[in-house]
Amino acid sequence: MYDFYADPEPDFLYTDGLNLLTDDEHTVGLAHLTLTPILQALQDNPFNARVIAELREYLDFQAEEAMDAFNRLCELGPTYLTNRLAELNAEYEGEEW
Image 1 (tube, rainbow, N blue to C red):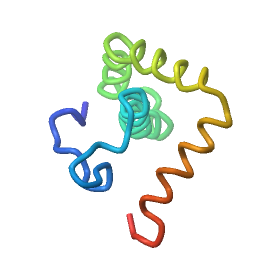
Image 2 (tube, rainbow, N blue to C red):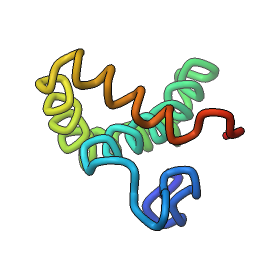
Image 3 (cartoon, rainbow, N blue to C red):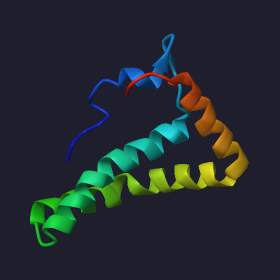
Image 4 (cartoon, helix red, strand yellow):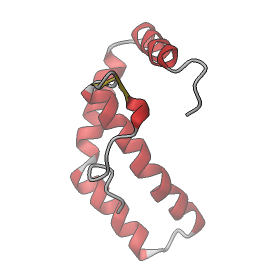
């Protein structure tokens, strides 16, 4: 499984050396980055033992933390999340990602 924790953080997550994401946003983002290629690989080849093992490893060790973070973000409500997305978008308005 690709280890996103081992790689340096992308530059676009920082402004003036400060991380733009909260811990929960970071956790949910890592879950998305981890699960997307696994689920795509399963869609392409549903019986691939290596991919199934990666999914099982994720579900056994990281999924609960990601789900808790997602639930905490949902509890903040749609207004907060809309404003937060607008705030993050304003940081990069006009810049290429």
